[in-house]
Length: 212
Ligand SMILES: CCCCCCCCCCCCCCCC(=O)SCCNC(=O)CCNC(=O)[C@H](O)C(C)(C)COP(=O)(O)OP(=O)(O)OC[C@H]1O[C@@H](n2cnc3c(N)ncnc32)[C@H](O)[C@@H]1OP(=O)(O)O
Image 1 (tube, rainbow, N blue to C red):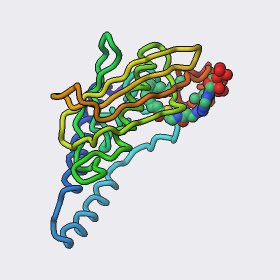
Image 2 (image 1 turned 30 degrees about the horizontal axis):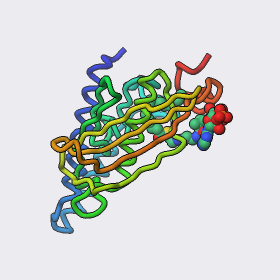
Image 3 (image 1 turned 180 degrees about the vertical axis):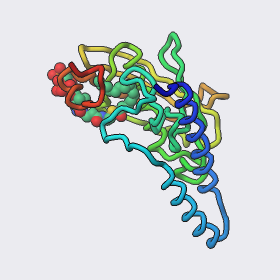
Image 4 (image 1 turned 90 degrees about the vertical axis):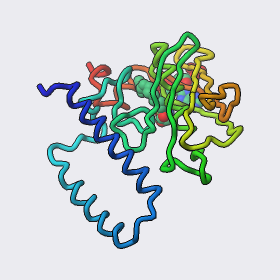
């Protein structure tokens, strides 16, 4: 079997280059004819991804599901061009995530798209459930945008489980500037449900852990 760590490293390296490319594209004022040529080059590059293509619900071989690594997650995945990626660490008071967003994640000029903040919080809050042994899905997310989130600013995200009632979990979350953690930019309250085994089996047919 191929070395898994080597493959994860390659996936992460490709992800890093793709993120850099996305940022370059979002900021470029390159002449139009060069853009047209570059589109053709990217198309030729895409054709070089040969080999088997993963089925829709198949878990990537580099992943550990549901409690671990998700290398193509648009929030945390080092293999994703779209992910900042969010780096998560467990603390005594819940989970802490760190990242900085780029111009490719912009909503209002100079500030992050609100959907990005919501996605990152949703993911971190989901991980807070998983950290309590309850991998769960979001059923409600209330996001309050108190101040705009500047791009290219180191951010600190927090998620803390505030209640567990059977399979239902409530979680609170926030986004703050890393160098000014008292200033809340975004605050969120979420409700999550850990699917029962039958539901998890039917939702995730590719997850070996849930199958008989
Ligand atoms: C095994 C899972 C792995 C998941 C991966 C983990 C990976 C490790 C972390 C990664 C982090 C990623 C974090 C991203 C999080 C997303 O983005 S998840 C994507 C967005 N969310 C969704 O698509 C969820 C859509 N909803 C559903 O599919 C179903 O509602 C669920 C969540 C599977 C629950 O279904 P179920 O297990 O059949 O639940 P059910 O028995 O009907 O209800 C249980 C209780 O919850 C309540 N409830 C259930 N659904 C709802 C609802 N939609 N609204 C209100 N109440 C509800 C019921 O009323 C019931 O309450 P009680 O009667 O007990 O008081």
